[in-house]
Length: 389
Image 1 (tube, helix red, strand yellow):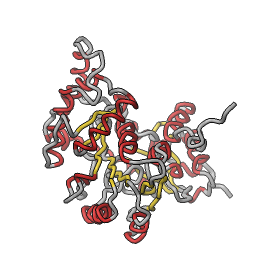
Image 2 (spheres, rainbow, N blue to C red):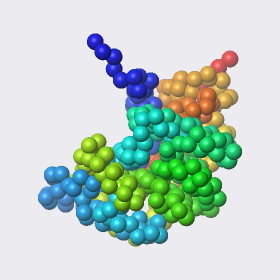
Image 3 (cartoon, rainbow, N blue to C red):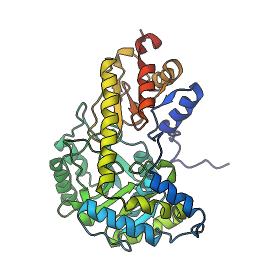
Image 4 (tube, helix red, strand yellow):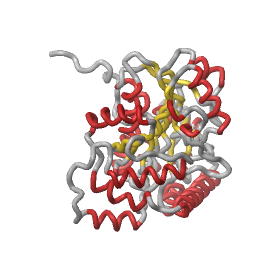
């Protein structure tokens, strides 16, 4: 019998999703996989109930229903400060996961190179490999996760076809400064490189940090594929609604790639979320206030437990330093953490190209009582998990 695909031979299952299963196995508080345990906005849920009895149960237009694209274009035009054409500059996808895959396949050929900052969301490397491209990893240096400009330009000197830019970053919570983004833009133009952005946490950026849409930088619109989703903004991770915004010539190709990947996103859910897309600025202010509170609550609790951790500038993840426990495998530590302490986390090694085994990722997109329960279970951690000799 012939062998299976060589390009996927090194794939494992998603470590993030695996840790949710481990959490369920041990009855742990799941602060591993990044989804909320609170309800989406009531207005969206009410509209979803109405849509169930309306005529939205068959295929929508492949690249997104007209109503959805118009509402999204209006919202993103306000946010990005640039008028987005709903008919020529948007393609709706099945979550940002498909948006990133479609974007990668739109711009790369087999053998092309793609720059990825490390740490990175685990799908990026897989997307690159599935596209037949070759990843070039550039480290973000803890604790502030800055990049070395010389190292980054060395990567660009390899003439990559594209760069993936996650901002705010999962898992480290870095928000790239405008100066950093302008430097990246200079290199992208100098070496004629596309930039594929992942901006799903665009509305979760903590003061005094500011989010800058890479596509809005001078000269970058023509070479940027802006990918995002509604999952985090409206607490609907299971709805799988994402999108790519880009110039018409890029979107025209991305529409075709998307069509053959998934045909289209769920029609009833596109219609239901239009209500959310029409929310005013107050909704996004309240969303940020909610996550600012949760961040302060969770980090204060970690401080009181004397657990070393990062302070994210955006998104809702925090990295904990487990060096004191002496584990050679952070995956083993996370399994023991779920088993003996009842808290689910993700091993940091699943995000780093470098040999990092002393960090684990938790998130705080949970009800206050859930976060307090997780902190309560972490109390006395050093007696529940004995340091390795």
